[in-house]
Length: 139
Picture 1: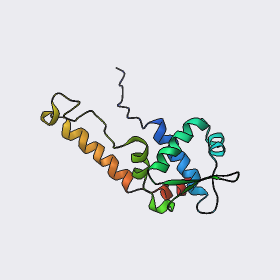
Picture 2: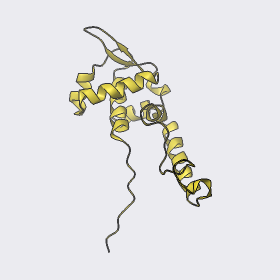
Picture 3: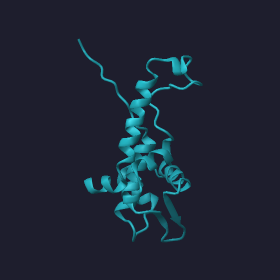
Picture 4: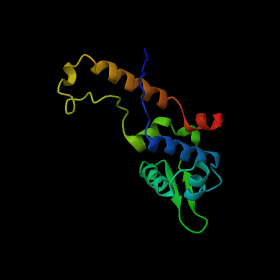
């Protein structure tokens, strides 16, 4: 019989956000990076990447410099930015299942609640322990 595996997907927003931040990190601290340049290189819509950059700016991870030679740059070094910081800026907290009192009729009574919360917590710890610099080193 054919087995179907569990697939957990990270949103496109987070995946593209990581790629955007890697590009900024590769140019840190000397060069500003333009959205169009990253969009072309990574084959991402400029408009979508602008929305992602706005979320990262709002979270205090990037800054924008206006003008003809303007662009985006990191507010901190890649060693100081955790992957969890980026994830939280783009998708909020990691929650693998709708195990909360408002969404699940069983709430804390559900036997699966601790499983999903524990797994979500492990993913958060994994992202918290890795920095943007760790992704850049692999590139």
